[in-house]
Image (tube, rainbow, N blue to C red; front, side, top):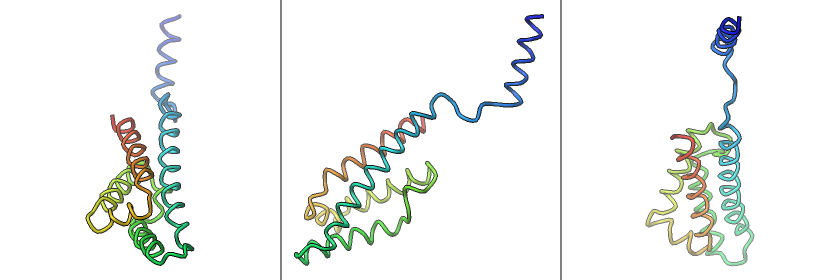
Length: 126
């Protein structure tokens, strides 16, 4: 009888697999940190829209234009968000945009986003 009960349990598991696995909380936590890092960067950039220095306003506007190419990144599914952030980071490190990142003093926030995205990708894609 124990063998039959075990077989029935295995059949139930095969026919009704769990919706989430034990890694789900870690994936969610890593994604939330990545979202916070993105929002921190963009909030800081947007804060320059009202700066009295026109060079800072213009730098912020250009970075916002770059971000706009990728849409609402934090609402994308995990794979698309990872790829979009990687592309966004590549753009931010490009020779035309990197000086603007430095001018606004947001290099540490860019580094935070890169670290969070890498941590998510390393865990999620392993």
